[in-house]
Amino acid sequence: MSKNFNVAAASFVTGIPLSLDAGWLVMAMDDIAAQEIDHSAILKFDRGLFEPICLKMFRSKHVAWLPGRREVVFIGANGECTSIGSNGLDHDEKVTTSARNPGNTGDVRAATSIGDEIIVVGMQRQVYRRLGPNSWIDMMQGIPLADPAVTTGFECVLAISPTEVYAAGWNGELWLFDGTSWHQLGSPTNGVITALCFNWNGEVVGCGRNGLLIAGRNDQWRIMDEVDCPDDLWSLASASEKLFAAGLRHMFTITATEVKQTDLGDCTARTFGKLVSTGEVIWSFGEKDFLSFDGKKWTQFV
Image (cartoon, rainbow, N blue to C red; front, top):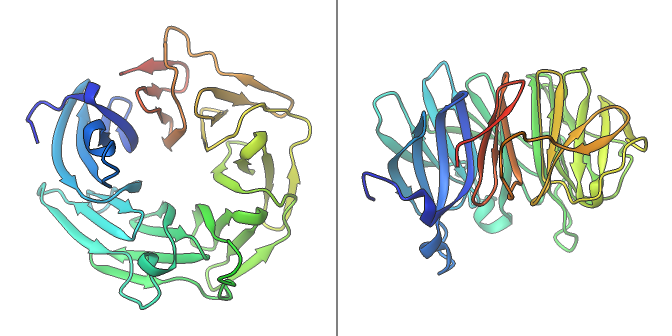
């Protein structure tokens, strides 16, 4: 990989901010992607500089920053995992060594961090937990085996605390892990829930196709009928008392009474789809656009 990464010849996939203008990125190199070869170009981003670190031959679904370990972890769709520690060396592992795994059961779809641990979810209601380097456990207590004849699975996961972890996905399924086992919750929808976000007002918000927006917590959930969104929604993020949702071509700002297209100021972005938030910073990734939100305004890096 060249020392000067050619961002124009690649597409943004995901990443994780460590500050407003620094963190880690995953990009797909357009020429390799055109051959339908799964891969992840892993970069460090620092104030406009894109430093290539390594190329991994898997499709990244999530990037986690573990502050206590000073470690960044990249999770792949087939259960691959690459970690990079403070020494800058990359290390490969798998999310599980069990007979039932993403390779034979279904893709990893999402992950979330809780402290220095990671929870990974996927199709057929798979859940795995990373306790530390090379230390993964299955985390499906209370979840029955899915009927292989029925498409089901988790598309998103959100950890608020060790005793309040939500997973959601196909058929509108909502599940809660209480620290001991998972329990299925009553859901207000049978549509696919694509993302979950802890909003600044203390509610959990979920989104999906056809502008689906739900809100609630624990076992009380509702459709947000008071708002109307025209697009399929794929991602959510909250910061500084603002809630954003991303479709592939538009970003929206959501309040209790309306959904409106986000005012991006001077930004000229035309592609969206992935929002990642840590604290007061949000990064937005589209195929060819990379933005950052500092709590007040959006800045375009690419």
